[in-house]
Length: 309
Ligand code: 13P
Ligand code: SF4
Image (cartoon, rainbow, N blue to C red; front, side, top):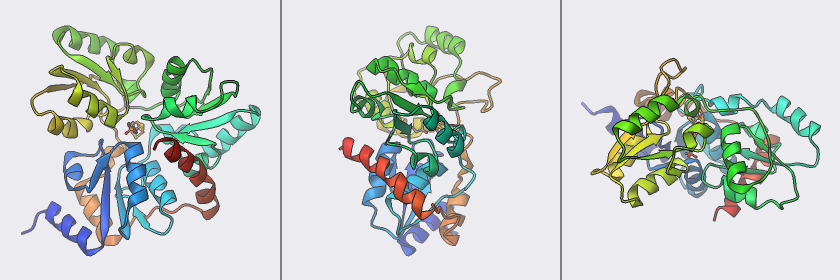
């Protein structure tokens, strides 16, 4: 009998579909994907897709971004409930009110937000280009940055810009324990700590490198160190270890009483191999975005992609 992976690969061919997967997906899903990447890479890849169907193995805002970039293609997501705490922290109506209360600001939003919020945005960014995008705005222009306050604080520190921050955060990256991280580092003084900028400032202060998921993978490939403590979602370790089979990768420890219990994203992990199969078979759940939102949200995404070339 054929394995689930084999059946998915057959269906994918039959339906002329591609599978785009984020680094936080479970290892089995990453292994059957046509492309695995960070948010920016996935958006760039989504633009090049030639297939009829995009199965997006990631969370809702990522699939929505792929749909906005490919309005004529069918974009499907294995589990429609695969959301994101950052996107959920920023409802479009409250965000619109916030913008109206602070006129004259350029609105920059992290890609981890809904299409409705993107439609209210001047320019989108991801963790790999956020500093560059903020620096592209003239110095005298005030900026609203949403929804991630931790990434926002990191950009303020890097650029010296005084941005107005939305009060959102990632449940996974806020769960890292500084005390446990210090303990782990004492046991592994030869390790380098690397962190995603969604982490809190006290975690970022310990890091030898701060960057997006793709940036972190590149860093462990090029840095001569043999051991790394990795402060981001644990799914990244699969691809990272494949890239550096001889290096030691240790996941950064989370607080015991956090909502995730470990550094796994509960939303990313809603997708399973079985759901990928069912989703391809039924071509559902499908991502839809109202035409007016799609049109408005495309502009700030295209601005970002243009600046990221
Ligand atoms: P990247 O853009 O680094 O892949 O991050 C996406 C994300 O959701 C991090 O939590
Ligand atoms: Fe959202 Fe955090 Fe999960 Fe990324 S890791 S999808 S930011 S909840």
